[in-house]
Image (tube, rainbow, N blue to C red; front, top):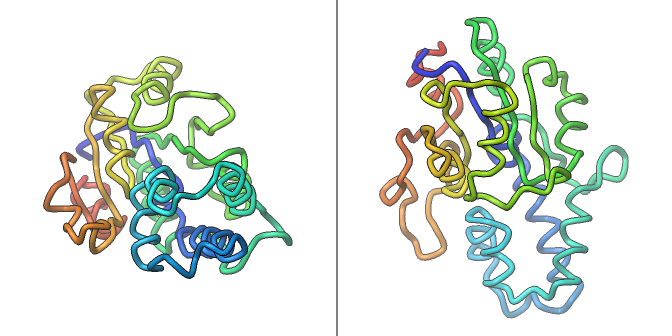
Length: 218
């Protein structure tokens, strides 16, 4: 494998959760009477850049934003449909890394619900450590959480890569001095630009399987 330590984003990277998140977002905008003046596709693309970008584009008030995020974090029987679920190849990629002596780590802006999803789908055994929002690190692309994972697990930065579906994910790794990868990226940014054409990432892949082959995991 090209790297030994894989630091993973959660939403949109390991879990196909953006249809679920967008439903929560659009419902919130609709309930507040804001959706009628907005373009659904542009809102979705802005959400794929970051929650902050969506908030700016839609001029979503702080209280509505908090309500949207809280709703997107409902789990179990309360989870808003469509449900979030792992991408079909996520388990195989994570399992292959550990089988080859590598280790997986999670770094997500999501709260403890990320651990709930990993437990629910039987993916927790593949992870050596995780950072969720409860730890209070500055948001991506700040490197603080990545550096914390490296320090507390004694990782060699040269053997680490941060993997995510948004530029800010990989940049949190690159800002920490490790490699970055962009996977599952959208077909276009809000301005129509191809993300792969403007990325600063070291690697790009349309799927986890494609990424795994690039890394020599498969």
